[in-house]
Length: 367
Image (cartoon, rainbow, N blue to C red):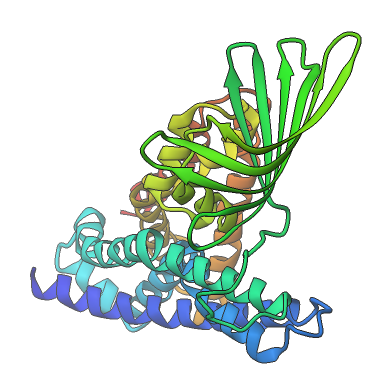
């Protein structure tokens, strides 16, 4: 690493950390106001603050791409305002060489993003959701012997069968993987209900790879009759294990790791529309290096181009608009994956590729 690389890396990392810190503080403030609006007497200020601090890694992860762009924009803009960038260019350093000097900064940001996305965020989300649900239910926080931690809307599962499909709703799951309030609905190939079962609880048999439901009330329907009966136990031949259920109970796609999303998609038991958010999130995580590169190139292009002689206020304002523009492009192309059956990887790549193309053109015109 040359002197130029070390200097740019230090300036850019300081700027990115400052921007992400400011954005995270603002996000925490607004999220705290929203959490305090729960309207539950058991859920107070300390509970809301604990939940937000535990889930802060995921919020920082979401802010990091915008922090990278605005931080690089401010760092490079300050160098340009002080004449340092002009001196670097006058010494024969090309824009392409400056991009190479920014790669260590992007590498550091990618390492932080990986640590947040794959380790800190999932663990924090799980602990935060558990503490919040315990507080809402009036249970002692952190009590490992506490009863079921029930997701707000429960867990829905769909599984294909030889004769049709099976839909299951799980009311809750505890730390030991025991289920509570399970409803299983079976439909035939014509989507007609042929059986429904309601169980008080369920345990997973790892050796046989199935669930054993207890206190099951069954209703079987055919063309002419309806039969109802009770069973002490019933074998539910669903291979989804407690770890996978716990992931779905406490996380949406944004809060899951790449491996967890991949396992969800590999089951292939969900409708196409239901799988699209998971596919989009999966490719957003995998293509994070491309996003960071496009942001870095756009920041350099803006600084050596239209904002070469502007102050920090104008650069910050323009940077916010450019960052929002990237988000709007993501929101524009993401629905195409479901509505027009566009591959999710392409819907995620298009905004980054647009920014790369625009940035390269600006740099070429001002090189």
